[in-house]
Image (cartoon, rainbow, N blue to C red; front, top):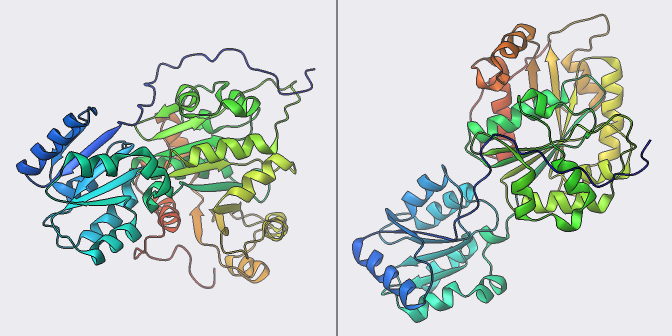
Length: 405
């Protein structure tokens, strides 16, 4: 039996399309004159022309909601009625690490301050010149005065079961799929159970040794490695999973988890971590790093007891991390079923989302090779409510459970 996490064998290439890297520069201008000025400036600076599109900041919000964000984004706010509001909308769709340079025709110190506070790196007043653009595009300026959009990190979400068999992986997979396919966010799904994880199986993709490679060689984790080892599911969902031999004694370090999650947060809107319920330092670190810890429970005495213990161990009083309770398989019944109100009384917290017990749904999708969230219905509605909770966007929705049940 091998005693340590050894270097893996070469990764098999999957037939799926590999992730596409970020473009270097995209610009969205308001008119033909600005387009010509920007072309001329980039040519004078001997910089790649990038892609320049008409439509200004509104067009940027629309396009970047559908495709990868560039390293440098130039947006024209000329003529925008609510430029600050639109910059905030832009920040929502931009991936982490984007440098945003705004251009416009108002020489207003108050506007400049509002734009910087909203997240832009710099604001250039027209007419554009090569000197002004050289200063704005200087990489040293980006490092020293990076805007909030550049500094922001993707949200890390850990999904952990109060006990085994409560549907933790099913929820992690459906939540990741919904965020990527319905909310158009770039999502990394990481299955930290390297031997018995089911994320790849649930998404009908082949597990590779990519996750093992990332954890055994954390010093090599960068954009190139991640694009090579992650398995794409559609255009915006990427999966890191392994299926290692059961006779391996797998061990990886806290630093390896730290490095991997930090690298993913630089590239994705959401990093969904399916964390095994195993008392190890590496898994504890994954839970500690998460902005949000979703504790999945069912309505059994054992689950309620273990939820209390898990919440106590995680603690969420520092304001940076939150624990969120999700009840799965509501309505399954059984001799030891605990009502939702009894759970709330014992936990001293109300479950945020309740997922219905729908065995027929999962039987049907198994034959179609689809995830449950791809179908309309109560289950998908509950996953959507959880996605809204993650995004922080208020949205009127009906309650998923009522008093007295």
